[in-house]
Length: 575
Image 1 (cartoon, rainbow, N blue to C red):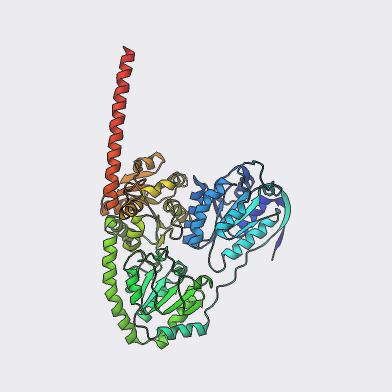
Image 2 (cartoon, rainbow, N blue to C red; image 1 turned 135 degrees about the vertical axis):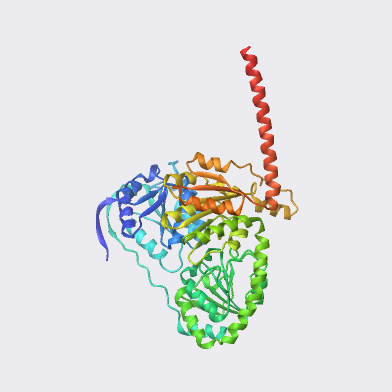
């Protein structure tokens, strides 16, 4: 049922519509063109989190949306601000995260070829739609409420995606009547009994079955473990599915999408059940991804169902409902002896995978060890907000033992840098009781290190681990592997602990697993962020940290010589 609104501004229509939909927090920076929006948000009692850059706002909203599953809102001003946020929204799009971006746009009567107005973009909404595929430019103050209702209806139905609403800046302060339009979301589809029966029959005699689980199945952890037991199937997780099941679960193979052994495992399987996963190259690196003839796929998105695999048994349905139904059917058709034989096959691969992960993650053994020690002692959930860096995808993704309910937030699809810290801030604001640890490399950290100041101001208690290898380590390795001389990858970074302290955060350096675990525990008692700096023991670090230190030494020597010369000149002037 809709409710008529009186003559109010476009900004007021927006604030009231968000409040009616249960939105209690927005992330964004006020600007000349959105002042009425922020005035009305404040009047409605909506919490405003101010980052230091709009990209940070987008990542904060993304982190909050991932841990709650609820739509989060970013508000920017026009032009550069909305495009600053767009990189973060691309990340949300590729990882299916519900973030709503709202901004002013050029006035309704703005000249088509422009006139030099502040922040002018000829067709801002079209540019955003090219990335997000969903945008709505309103044409009256009262249409704002409709736009909110329609956007949230789409975002809360089926597969989560970001959306964009543009309000022409002349409508933000203009008044007009309107109607409240509550969002309407249809329930997830139930699995068809015939599809479940057909899939169970195809799986009944499988000897080497696997489950591949993505973040779309996060709500079905218990059910997935039971399906795994009934089939005797190993469970492979995408990066963002870590914590869906316990990493100590007896049939777990882990988040092994980065390991070169993955194609061997898949090639040996005779059946796969893919649940809530895109099966995308950004999640499962070795290509091509060899899949057996029998592929059962459970997904809400019937279009996605057809990507990255030839599916023999599609089940368009909610992950939990479909997994329960499939398990129930297999109880009737799957013999215990078949399941036992499958488990024996699985156990052989577990040792191989464990060895491969240990070898790949060796440079980050101290990092993972300290994180595991901390997780064992910490109250659940522990949320790790990771960056696109080697210590996260080669190290923590396979080396951190997450419990069911813990979370690993990883920028898989777009692979953006600087995601970890602001995403961790958003996650902590959304789930205050969680223990949040952000992890970044020294190169990626500099993309959004300014958000440490935002965390200080908001008194967000989290840990930021910066793992230092002296620059862009992965790119350095790729250059070297091509036979190129690495160029443009060595970075002379700041004194990270001192930088943190200058912003009002705690900053310290650790070297061992034990020191890291202790620092993470102590960070819980600090009303604000703690930056923990450590170096990694990798080939990139051996090369670049040595070069960086040599450059620093040369710089200090030159500076010392300059200061000595300057002092000598000053003495001559005095005489």
